Image (cartoon, rainbow, N blue to C red; front, side, top):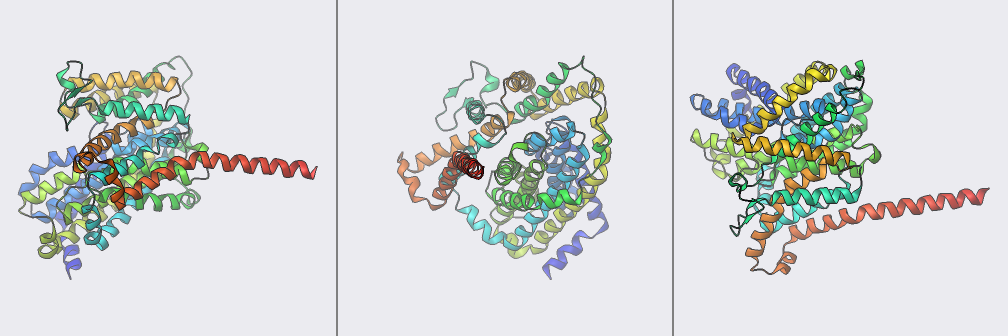
Length: 502
């Protein structure tokens, strides 16, 4: 009866209208570089005070889902991820757009996002209490092991040189150390600038490495004939395309749900891992970074699955699974609702209402994404002299909007120049971004773990979950050279048999 009650609450005309409005706003906000769903939910939160609890939380949850997908639109079309979770989508989405297949990339992003979102919602409603106990067991040692596993993927995250990938990842981790160390209070690499005391924000670097670097590259081609994308930019993915990537979507949905359940991990980490695993298991590894549909489906399924996963610890434990979930948790408190076992026992209608709100939001932005893909893809047909000045303005606004500080704009410009020259030198932005994302987590969790273990690192061996992730990291590191060795042996065996038959 509780599930029926939740459905009836959501099917009220006013609530449905608010869900649709939240979905459309989320897609549009997510598509603007520098703006995120957490920022949009935070701005919308004061206006929900005048609403009943269920319509208010339903609208916020819908905006959360749609904002995660919205970032893929500009990531694919102009190489400017609208939100951090869409950074991995740009690796193959933008090359697809340059090939004239923007519609195919956008359609795949929409379907993969919805599939990941629905998968995580089913997990949320069926297994939230049980899965929340797993998340509750994660302490600093487990988070450190998880981030080590993530960093172990640096060598293979892009199709370029493994050595350059490792150098780029190490540089990203180095950027993450700028600012005051939270454990010791020591200033590092601030060079006397107060603006750097709190560290370098992720979003200005993201905008600079992707959008600004691409803008500078396009500016260097201003005297070249303008390449017009073919009308295939307006075509959606075919049934054969979906058949080829369904296993990638399913795998990344599981990864995103699991990572989302872990408090404070969020969609960005899920998308990075989803992309890397899509490449690891793909038969077209060499095509990644050059326009591979699996490279779009993997991160998009993972980052949207993380939204449903993030609601598990938020609702079951009162521990936000992401920044946006933290704002939604604040919305619950504003309306006098307390998350945790109390919510499960006394407000089951609200839980099912949130589930149906996120489900409806996924279906709405599926239609919005598929129908709008033909319209959005026309952006790739706009001449460069009109498109890129607009992109530059969006980059400046997006970087400034993070903290209303011009220092973030300067960081974005420096990151753009750096990204431009690094691209020319053969370095991919993907490992730098992954190193920056995981750098804060690996440093802080290691410091907390060593304090917890009284500086005895051998205590990591007493944590089964940490050992599991360390083992995965070892397998990840060993898989690349082992794979090359197996390929070399197979090639040698094939050559030997060929010579023997002559």
